[in-house]
Length: 151
View 1 (spheres, rainbow, N blue to C red):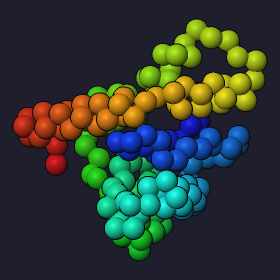
View 2 (cartoon, rainbow, N blue to C red):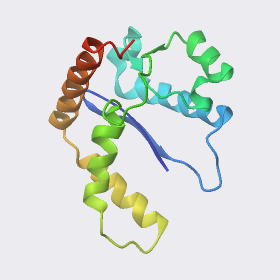
View 3 (cartoon, rainbow, N blue to C red):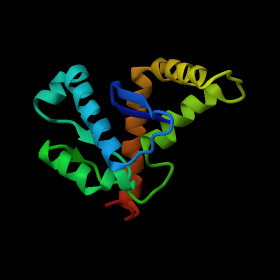
View 4 (spheres, rainbow, N blue to C red):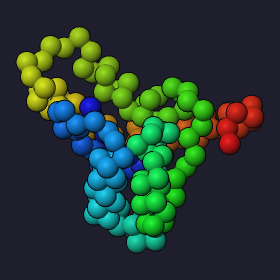
């Protein structure tokens, strides 16, 4: 499984779930630590003034006390997750469908080949495409808010 954190400018951090590993609170806490380091290195302006936001779903590992305490201790602001809708999460309506479309119908000889091709497609996404994704997300959020379904 591929975990990706991205923003208006592109990919901030990605990693593949090690084979046999489940995403539990301890594992996700380590992912958050690696994400923070990636932000520090790749987005120093956002890191310096702590002006970045985290959006993740309400999976048990994400909402565990351990992770919430870590995020609070590090002053990480999280965006609330709206009621699940595949058209609302940027990874669901933009990122993973885009990668899947390019890989659909292709045969791979190994897991490493799948990982390699997935990363190749991930890195091929342009800054303009990421910017459009977030503009679309903003428009979707406004529609949900107008209908009284968001926040």
